[in-house]
Image (cartoon, rainbow, N blue to C red; front, side, top):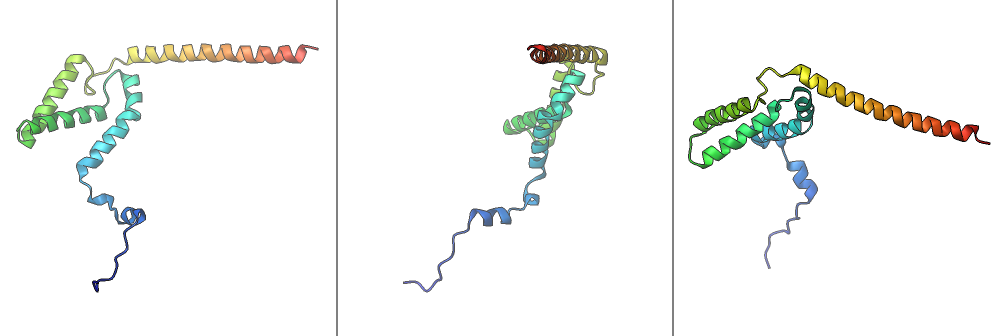
Length: 139
């Protein structure tokens, strides 16, 4: 029999309390921020401008950089090549955030959407109020 005391098994709470988010690399925070921003604010940005949002563009650049580095390219060269590739592809598609957006087209699309939603809302209100008045006026 050993003279060593029995060590308690750490609980999940011990692991949670010992976790320090500042130990994580900055790139992980950037990736998480780009993912959250592109999935929330980016959707509104894309709907309003018709362009890809800057956070999605950053995520595309990061993915392309990782692919180029995996293929054997140096990190700084891979980053500049990825930025160039992604920017050129987005400019060719007319979707780069640095391009001047067509606000009138986007404004017209948003105005049309607001009009459709307004008509649906008005129709629903007329139906609901009409049904309520019918129930009130019926003996």
